Image (tube, rainbow, N blue to C red):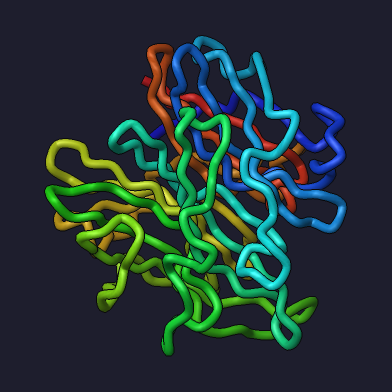
Length: 303
């Protein structure tokens, strides 16, 4: 997968919004009529993420043709799992409704945070969302105590399958506490309840301590996945894997063929990548330095 970088699209200074001052995180693209909508986690001055969107021209994603002046999904109620942030994760269009899976953030006292998964629904094709539950649809378990987030969902046959970030511990990185997390898989008869025993989809290697934001598609009978890889030596990069059964993926990170730039907004980090294919090509949207504080950029797949 050879990518040609096309530059930065936006950062916190693009629109001058009071609720968007810092990071631009986890872009999730969606074709909405004639617009390529990009749902984005937009962080305020306290680094609390609300969900907004920008509309791009599908013929030229550098061209912004609209944006949300207010969040389409705001912070949760005080004391709730998403009181300190909500981040886009995945979309499911079903029965005329757009289901929005998002990561919930809640600050903790003795560790930095807990991140689980919420679900909201839109009846107006993504202009607004309403939470279906006040509690996470993926909550903590004995062996997944701190993270069950970054859901990617697909309906395969009569089952709903999710791939998600699973975290159970922390380590002292020197400058701060950092979490360990890999990727797991679950199936369910319901789109909002996943109670089974998860299976490992992707495991850590070397000095890595995080795998997150999977995107899965099927091509020529093979399941393919892109994901974000976090390591001590490199920070965040993007990876790629393949699977015959769609559960356990063999890592082939060298095939992703995109890396940080020599300078600019993505010179230190490239993360949270999501692809979409439209009439003008296949595009990859991603966050840059400092988990998106540098902004969001995109690349085009070479053919």
